[in-house]
Amino acid sequence: MAQEYDLVILGGGTGGYVAAIRASQLGLKTAIVEKGKLGGTCLHKGCIPSKALLRSAEVYATAKRGEEFGVLTKEVSVDFGKVQERKNKIVEQLHKGVQHLMKQGKIDVYEGYGRILGPSIFSPMPGTISVEMNNGTENEMLIPKNVIIATGSRPRTLPGLEIDGEYVMSSDEALNLETLPNSIIIVGGGVIGIEWASMLSDFGVDVTVIEYADRIIPTEDHEISKEMQRLMKKKGVKLVTGAKVLPETLVKENGVIISAEVKGTVQEFKADKLLVSVGRQANIEGIGLENTDIQVEKGFIVTNEFFQTKESHIYAIGDVIGGLQLAHVASHEGIVAVEHIAGKNPAPIQYHLVSRCIYSNPEVSSVGITEEQAKEKGHKVKVGKFSFRAIGKALVFGESDGFVKIIADQETDDILGVHMIGPHVTDMISEAGLAMVLDAVPWEIAHTIHPHPTLSEAIGEAALAVDGKALHA
Ligand code: FAD
Image (cartoon, rainbow, N blue to C red; front, side):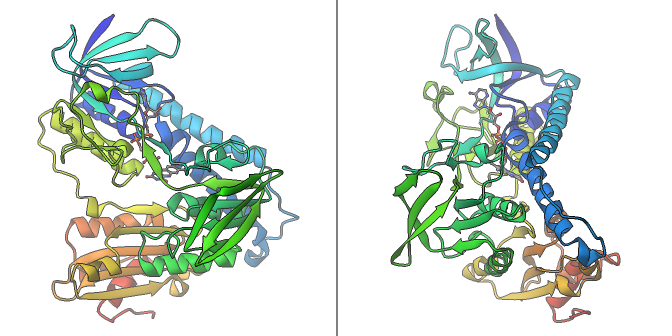
């Protein structure tokens, strides 16, 4: 049977389901088509489960240091089954929350695989959605005025390092490990690779990271990645940078053996398991793009600033359009797309002001550009840095590694970028983001009185340090 809608969203991940809520708030008759589970990658295979595991690892690592806090524990150990149970419970709770929000917003959810059809008896324009229902009932036909493609992404693999689920894993399989391996090789030292390295190392796994670039987390400010390198090594993580993994050398037998070319020499690495974390690939296949004029470039759907594709009534948001593949970006893109559909004239997203976070232990967060990028753009920069070592609350926490770094333009005083590494910095970056959105200068951050004792004092001190006036330096 055919159903008519103002909006049909293909994919119920963070981008899709948030777009649906906004659409329902704006009075649009809305449906979501989801082949898996509402909440998508972020809720089921990404942000939430990985952070739940990271938290357990952090608790374990802290408990082992109990004596330092005057807390004497008997031998501390990990029950990994319970760790997974806790993670699954959190995910399930949030999944129920999303299902409830769909009901509350009177959003129709079709559980099945959606495809965009070309012009048909239902509509002269491409965009009718045919849904192959998961429960095997007859295909549903949805006739929308507008469509949002929010089909997300999946782990990228390297030829020769195909995922087998036993020895070679992506983050999808790693999240569901039943037991911890003794050792692991992680190919890729970007955000996801470093989160896994940090977590597994805190759980006591012997971790080796093989990274192609000359430094880990290479998109971050140079000093941040250098500090992360130091702190990962301090944890015992082996970091091999400037290394090209040689997939053809992979041997899988009671573990894995693989070689990499490291600065002209070939080195061999052995471990129980191998995790491939080399980026994510957009889900653009099998969704009917060939029935439309939608453009794809370098594997991602091309859109304008309001997320319209070449077919102006079909929008695309989130990981499927590339750029910053982050949950908060996907959902904000969804909101902008829906508001555009509803004629609300939304402001385009200022991508340079989006905060980025790494939830390793210690954490990293940043907004704006790096010092290197600022110099490349021709800015004369002034930099204020403040270490957590001089912050009382960091000492109280027993986590005083890391610093806050603020980069400003010498002439205009504009803040160009804020970068942090240290305890709980992912919860601190929004202050810097707000400052940049409001076009604040370092002086204004410094004169915002930061409560004592808090970790945020490091931001106030770094802002003072931009003009050489930090108080506790
Ligand atoms: P997705 O969440 O991937 O959702 C797409 C949905 O579409 C899926 O549910 C899929 O089943 C469905 N779908 C696809 N094709 C069809 C079809 N034809 N018919 C019906 N349904 C379909 N981001 C952060 O901001 N913070 C983090 O801490 C973070 N941690 C991460 C950790 C890991 C290990 C990973 C892998 C990712 C992490 N991310 C994080 C990234 C984040 O998960 C993604 O950016 C976000 O999920 C993108 O949302 P989306 O809606 O575009 O796509």
